[in-house]
Image 1: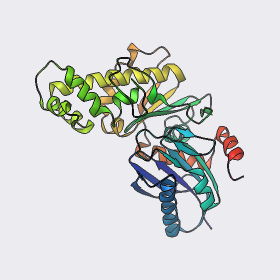
Image 2 (image 1 turned 45 degrees about the horizontal axis):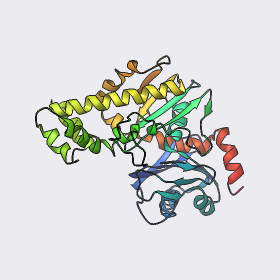
Image 3 (image 1 turned 180 degrees about the vertical axis):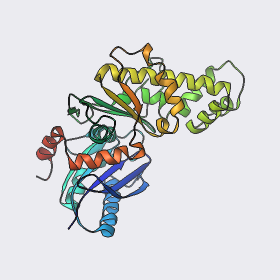
Image 4 (image 1 turned 45 degrees about the vertical axis):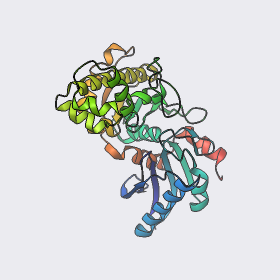
Length: 327
């Protein structure tokens, strides 16, 4: 009988579940909208249904589950304690999945899972200091330092999206904090940032400016108008590139990686914007610049990382699971 692991990527918009062989081969994946309501068991129940659906088609036995999820986390319980970009906020992950399937369930932040994938099978393979950064609905990161996956006391040693980059009080994050990188430059918050910039704009009333004034300019539309030469869009993208340059440089200054990869929808769909951001990090960087590139693992980076968390659990996480799981 074939043995499988399940990899789970719980995002603020979509959840993806994949069935993998024990050497990391993806057999099949499914995607569905992440539950936005329904109580603390809603997400785990939806994930369980997807795993059961995959197993019914492929047969075999499930030996473990790896989960990369939006945070912040309580890594001891395996619960999400208050996701700022997901209305359901708090929900359980580890306990209900362990109870339903009777296997070990490893739960980490989605970007921590992605960093593990980069370290084992991505650009970071063969290096001991690897950082992954996502620019997407939110902004987050994960880091392997000297071969150790960083977790922290609650599993949140990677919350780089909440680095403070602005002290003006103009930008409030979904978590409630002020001036966070995520509050300014994440997909969820860019429309509000553009509204702030439009109120201060002294130039011509362009299409981008008019849409931004009422908070109705999406990131996708912003980048389209920027490429079309809209003057306000050029101003706004220049501002966002500067913010990202400061944020990425801060990550390099803190973790001192050999390799840094970027993923998430904003990064992967807009490589020209990323080039503009990276061209400016020299203004803020202290440590020697690492190799910086888009992740070669694409949209699967978290899903792969979750699977490899289950296939080859980092020793830092094994201690947590053994102490607090059903074992």
